[in-house]
Image 1 (spheres, rainbow, N blue to C red):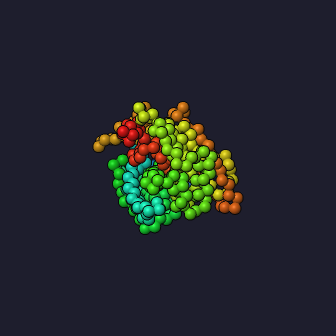
Image 2: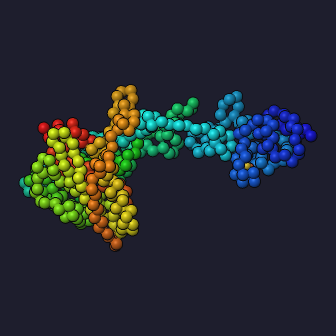
Image 3: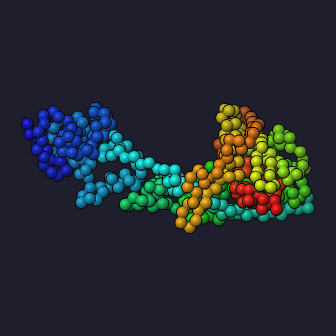
Length: 429
Ligand code: FES
């Protein structure tokens, strides 16, 4: 029996029983495949169409009930090839769309190759830090200045979708929003640029760079890794200028007893010998940070071997002491600190991307060196449990102290990352 129905402003004569679900008619007779068969029980919405202005589940709507009614499917949205406001909003919001079950979706497979990922992914922001300080006759810091130049790094996908690369290449592109720096005390680009215990006459300055030659986004710790590298390297430099042991110099300036405790614990476990100088081929360095100035206290002692002929630096061992407040899961806490040390060792000795004015030149793992298993240092973690203190985040606490401890262990002033053989040889020359 023929039934006449109006779909997307066109009248169709359909040969089907009156109890045939509209969904079957749309897909099988009219080749309108936007509506999908999902559950078949009016539960999932994959089959939804609009009938006389109301959304209905076509999987349970009999054909016989539709005579004289106006049916609109997803193919009928919009006019003259222009997207309907609903479709525009869907794109603008980067709404998730499953091609299998979502109404109007088509299954698509996009296969990115490794080279695509290297070529298009965001990278950690380049940063420059410049520090100045003065010491009095007793070797105490009397003024302090820390300047950082950096992108804010807060460009993860989210919000209106402008940070999602694919959004830039739509017919109607989604614009990238203006990147915003996180507020202190956690900060973002300037994370951990502020010393934990304020020095007299202290000035911390962020030179905010909203644009970078490469697309940048969040690398673990945001700016903390580089700021701690600079700050804790400079502390060592000041200790040397004051002719004071690096551990002693830190303890003289830090008032926070928990900060002092992790430094003492790391130094003790590592067998730190006051005033011991490296012999140019082997050295120990220490560094400390309280991540974000809000989270875990971490001190790291790095034991480093330097091949003066090749410039190769090997981190033989790293000892870390951690105070993350009440320790809830010792294994989890230890894993976080260990992982951060190994990641930071790899960043610090190996990792960087090369680019020219046109493109990324680093396009594969063959071009991008990371730490290999034989190069992974032995790691020892000391947990200082504080059952009377609230738990503190520890996830990114060891990256900053690790890089500075490695730098301080080389026995020379390393000012550029990573510590490649060429840079180490140049610094030693
Ligand atoms: S197929 Fe799930 S509601 Fe119709």
